[in-house]
Structure formats: structure tokens, C-alpha cells
Length: 349
Image 1 (cartoon, rainbow, N blue to C red):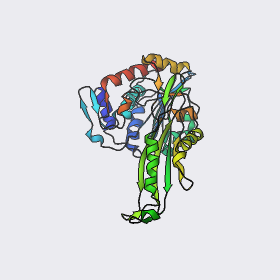
Image 2: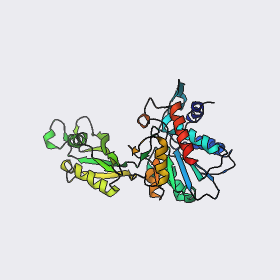
Image 3: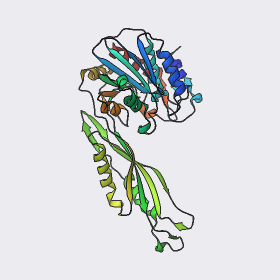
Image 4: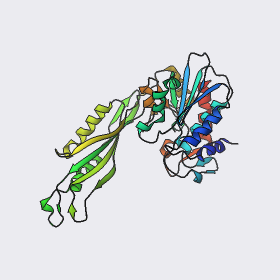
């Protein structure tokens, strides 16, 4: 069975966020074949840990879930597996399982973490569930998160904030619009301002992070003959690691201030902290060296930030092109899987 065949086994197990039970069953069964591992399951999160006496413990982690889609449409063409979750991140999960199930002694202690519900609201996170209920299972010296990175170590991550903007107006008959104030028209100024946003670029720890801002949802209107008195939009803001959540919120409010009136509101609906670049530790610097490429900043949010909040330095490193995550043409190649396997195997010893 080739590496792509083994990835296909995972891809064919539907594991959309909140429905990871079958895949968790599969992972737990595979891990249990290695007598060196102590395997524990917390909900749909599965952890396999060695229990030796080495002073250093490495954590290799990945999420089981995918965004919605049809996993049965996955296919292998030449040297690529094309399908839902192929690079985000069942390719990396498959390699992790291969290495975790090998009955091999290592010079370090290893913790393999397979967790649920990464692709939805952070409040639902399986990794946070583990930290809350069984923090002992996710303690270690450093962590590698198998997010797709194209085989390059990606450090830190952007913070993310989602805000609801509510614009106020006054109802009126559309035949007499001068008697009202059109909230949808007023919302247009917000959308235009965000569309003209010039991304902020900041260098941190030798890599550059580029902030982003997008309107992702819009709604408003009462009836076909009524000037609308309320309109909403949702803005997603990705901020650099030099800003805390409160600083990011302040920056976003300041940016929107010219088009927000006294009767309007800006409400934070969800947020997740940014992750700082972590390459100062020798263990993580060694991984960068083994990868053969200079580290770069992570575009997007990952649970590197969650590990850092828990006190575990972490980086992103996995198989697959990150630009293809959630894409209709999502895929992973045999070569990408092999490179990831070789580097990760050399790193754990």
C-alpha cells in the first residue's frame, strides 16, 4: 500500500467538524497497535504517549476534522490524491500515524495528539477541551502542528477577529425616501472602506506578517417598498502577532471610525489570539534546518497560538500546499508526503 493509499483511507472517513467519532475510532485502533504507546481518548480527541524516562518530550499534533464536502469524491491521479481534507490535513495525519505506530525506540518522549473541531469556532476546539480536562496529556517541551506548509517550517500565526457591524437608519416608504435614512446605503460606506484597506505588514522574529481585512457577510432590508432601517455586515480581521486582541480590536475600531455613527455599533463576535514566531529553541531550529528551507510566517490562524497560550512553544510543519486548503482542487502529492515523513522522522530520532 502506497502513502497515497493510506491517506485515502483517512480521506474516505467522513470527519466534518463535530462528526469525527469514526475517524477517532480509526486513529485509536491504529495507535493501540504500538505497545510503546499509552493511548487515551477524551471525547473525539485521541492521544498516544510514550512513557519512558527521557528528559525531552516532543508533541506532534493535528486536527481530525475537515470543512464540509463529499469525501467519497476523492481520487488518486498519478502522484496526487485529490479530495476533501487531502492536504488539510489528512496527508500529515497519515504520516503521523505511520510514525506513531512504528515500534521503534526514540531518544525523546513523544506525544501524538489527534484532536477534533479545529475548523469551527474556537470555543468548540478539541485541543482546548484536552487542555481543560486533561492538561497532563498535552504537556511537552515543544510542539509541531501538522498544518499544510509545503514542507517549510511556518512560525507563529495571525490572530483572527470577527466583528458584526450594525448600521442604523430610519424607515420610510420607497416613494418618499427623503423621509427616512437608508441603512443599506450607509453600510456601503463601510464595505467600500474595507475594500480599500491597505494591509499592514510587520516584521517579527525575522519573518513578515501581513494583516488582512475582509467583509464576509452582508444582510439588510425589510420589504420591497420600505427604506431599510438596519443593515449588517460581518468583517474578518487577521492581525499580526505584535498585537493583543484588545490592541487589534482598538485598531479595527479606529479604522472603521470615519464611517461609524453614534447610533451604529461594532460588536466582536469571535476572536483567537495570534501566535508569536518560535524559533529560539534549539529543538525547533533543528526542525528548520532539517526541512532545508528558511522559516516563514504562517498566513492564517492555527493552534500554534493555543499551544503557546498553554506554555508550549510550537511551529507549523506539514505536507501539502497551504494555498490549496479548503480549495476545490485540494490535493497532496506522494513527494510532499515523503518529504514530510523524512524530516519528521529525522527530527524525532
